[in-house]
Image 1 (cartoon, rainbow, N blue to C red):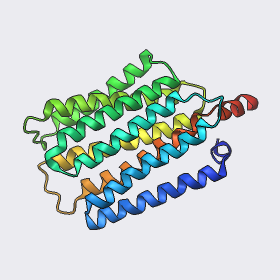
Image 2 (image 1 turned 45 degrees about the vertical axis):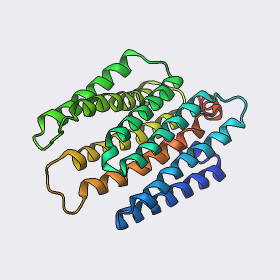
Image 3 (image 1 turned 135 degrees about the vertical axis):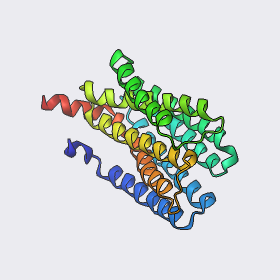
Length: 243
């Protein structure tokens, strides 16, 4: 599997550079807390990364473009959500933008393998755990935002559930499904940290929740952006030839 991941060395280098540069801006964000500059640039970078991967796939005529289009839409809405969240007064709009992005990611995953009962069971299981965290841990003060948080948790649970299901039960293109699953898990954990950062009444003078949120978030987005390239059919052909 690792050999197939490194098949296109030039694109691998490009994706690694995007990761390194994005994380550099992420670190600058953590150090300076200048969200207007560093967060905006870091977020725009993962959209550009996804676009570069999509262009490479687009040139390969045998490949389906549907997954790439939906993934790009998800990345764009995530980027918009990032920018909106810079202002706390725009939190609701940022959450809506992220939720729309998750819907696009879910649809993208569903273009690879159609929705089935395993997806639903896994997603509902994740959602049940999320509800326990939201409702049973007595540290949150939602101030009327609870319905928004629950709906958002449902949407991201289905996004993550579909990613896990695709990797666990579908035989085709394990590389792409692994990258998608890892990106989705990191995204979910990042949002969990955001939940504690925004709604928890726990005093956090060292911004631990915010720091972990940002450390997890940008690698998640770069992984999802990179997954667009691995939607190409070449990988599946290699797998078939080995079997």
